[in-house]
Length: 372
Image (cartoon, rainbow, N blue to C red):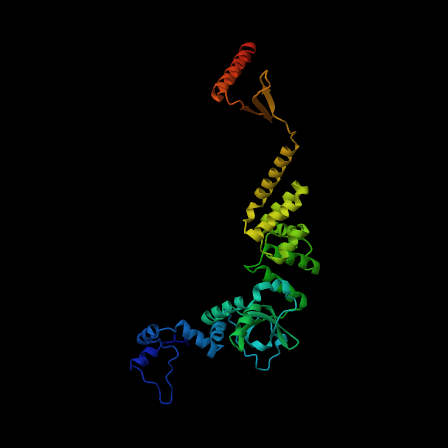
């Protein structure tokens, strides 16, 4: 016996052409929303910035709940329920803010100014308006959720009084958690080339990577970039001291130029260090290092050359009565001729000199014909 194709009857029921049997409840689960309802919803005015801020403070978890539902298709759970968190992997849910702790692998140097109150306030303001855009990543360790990434977001959430936050729970051992944190920090947009270089060195020291190719694969970057950044760690100690205080002062390109200058001018280290200090103290552009060093070196060499030139006294020309008429001085290839006697006309003397040198020139041209 052939089965008959199903017939959609909801529209017939709605039009009154079919009547359900007694005791059968009509379902409206698949009814399309009315146009009037859609228009009413669209025309409803949204909250102002002030109202949004008040909502974020009065209902600290309103933004996170709606954001969490759009972040991951997995089922949302409540951390207050009895759950064996250690068994969960790649699981998104709401967890208590008070249960979240910092990663022991997040160094104070890597945190730097990222946790300063002003930076956290700015992030909190953004989260209050737009909600939590992506979950933090944690693992369950010794009764707490240990952060792998999201250190700034958890601080912003706590500053707004949020009691819950959307989190992605993953199952990782210590080495995997540290590697995950390193990869996350390396990929931050605000991270400097020097900070990344120190991350690479730390990854090698920990045994997570043996070669530059391994590092490039681990951090999903180019091997050439890994090489240039690691070379920054070979800069002279005075420059490394400056970078430790301000890691984003120069990039790997400027560091490469500095290393080239040190190789070309090994005796000019102090000048090269001063060129880096100019960037820090005067805001000089990074690409000015080479030109500034060259200018300083050339200026010093010229000064030495002048100092080494013998000091020549002017030659004095007198008449038979021993009265000074002229003085002449030679500096390199420059002859300075001075008319000293007040009764002599400098213009006439100049004309006589020009006539003399012209005759000399004519004599050279007749005695030495030009070579073919």
